Structure formats: structure tokens, C-alpha cells
Length: 234
Ligand code: SF4
Image (cartoon, rainbow, N blue to C red; front, side, top):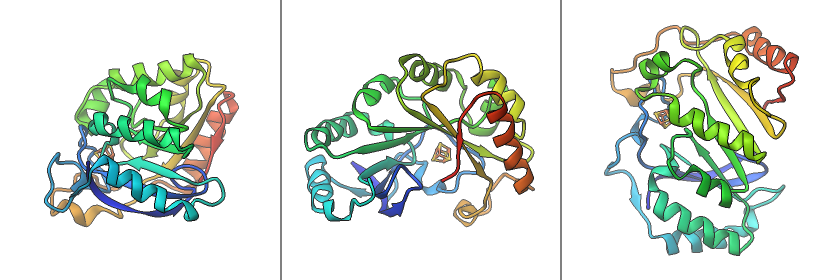
């Protein structure tokens, strides 16, 4: 598997203290991506690791999995390495190691991941197809299909929305979409725009004035909760 970064964080990418792997390669090109070096499928800075080596590394890290934490796979887009990641998830399930996958929701094997993953985070960047194409470079249909599949199955799903001025500051439009479904097992999180990864773009960064106020984030919470959608902050 191609791994760009790894490290522990607490409760940002799933519950508890988690060992987080950033897998190389993404099929989106979000104009605000804070990890732009994770987008190419090949990157000389990414490390090739076999599934069994990764599995053993995770087992050796067990003592660090406190407060319900275990292991998270994110990206880039983790599901692009689906054969290897699904194989690893099967091995971890046998060991009762709790897993989290954060995904942009496009995988054609989404349902297979749902079967194996304990905690699923799906990023939803926009509510409108044309604007989704404009800002991330791909249509929204596969994301919607997979999110709707999770809603209808009733499985746990954590939906993350990056909130970016000039891009998607319209909580009512998101709610209009989500309210069509049974979201009783879903939680929604709003991530205020930041520019931590801007320097990785080497002059090609394409967002201007993307910051949003605390008031905007509060409005997202208010509008979602007012329509019966559970929101969280991590
Ligand atoms: S889906 Fe994530 S990793 Fe991929 S381009 Fe968008 S922000 Fe970057």
C-alpha cells in the first residue's frame, strides 16, 4: 500500500486516540485540498508497505489505542487502494481492532467497506452537481448514491462538510437534500475553511477569501438541528 503519512491524533478522525494512515492518491482535486501532495497516484514521498507489514504495525500499536481509539484510514482517498485496504480490514476485524475510514464517498465498492468498517466518515463537499464538478473536478452522483445507500441501510455514518466562503455556504440547500432520507443513524459535522496546506500548492492554490465566521458555522448547526439532523463538533 502507498502511505503518505501516519501518526496519532485524538478524536478528530474517529473516536478516541487513533493511529491515522493517510493513503496516497485521490480521484478528486478539491481546490482547497490541505493535502495536495496526496492527490497524485504516485508520489516519491509515499512509502510502499505490504498489507502484512501494516497489519503487524497496527497490532504493535495496541497499547496506544485508549479511550476507544484504534486505527483510521484516510487520504488522499483511501478507497482507491481498495483491494489492499479491504484485505487489511478483514484481517483487523478478525483481531477485533476497531476501524474508521474517511472517504470522499465515490468508491464503487462502498458497500463492501460498509460491511467491514466500524466507523464511517464521508465528506460531502457540495449539494449541486455543476458546482461539485467546478470545485472538486468530478460529478456528485457516486457520492449521493453511496450516502443514500448508507442512509437506507441504517448504518452509522458521519458526514463531514467543509464550509468555504464563496463555495458552499448554504446550509438550507444541504438540508433540503438530506431531509429526503432517514438520517436517524447519521451525524453531521462542519469544518470551517482553513489554509494549513496552502504552501503545498506551490503557487497554484485556487481559493480566495474562503474563511467563514463562527456565526456561519453556528448557523449550519442551527439549520441542521432545526430540521431534525444531529450535528457534532470534534
Ligand atoms: S477529497 Fe480530500 S484528499 Fe482528495 S482532493 Fe479533496 S480534500 Fe484533497
